[in-house]
Length: 182
Ligand SMILES: [Zn+2]
Image 1 (cartoon, rainbow, N blue to C red):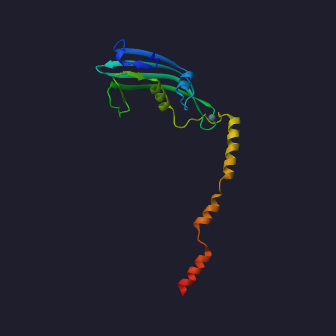
Image 2: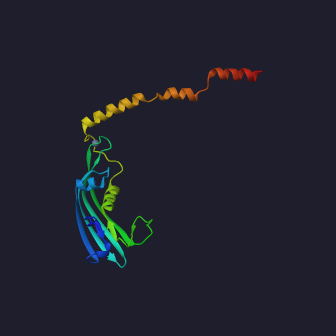
Image 3: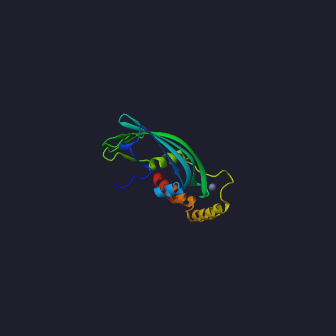
């Protein structure tokens, strides 16, 4: 058996019914996950694994900051993170459909918390990620706006298309009038 990574917790061999784990996440953590959304960060994680009869409760506290690309200038934007999350784990064969419950095969008995931690961080990020007004990277904005102008020039003129499909040809209207009068 391969040695377990620090994020893989062997639930069958916990040293006590309540175990504490701490992690320091840096850029290497995000690079290792090859997750495109977050590439840099610095966070501390404390995880408490509690055994309750045949199930487990995992309590995460994640604190620090990450960098994500700004929606406007694409440069690094710092986002502070402070999150508390809990998740239940139990052994079984059928995957869970409940977001708060993870089922792990009893044979392995191992849960990898790296992706869980990553997802808790991503879920806490706002939908719109932008520097405050005036704090975007000016030179990057200039490059981007030049690119946008080129795209707009290539687009068809909307009025031209409307004329083609929207209005009827006046000659046909005149012809219909003649036919109706006869
Ligand atoms: Zn920006």
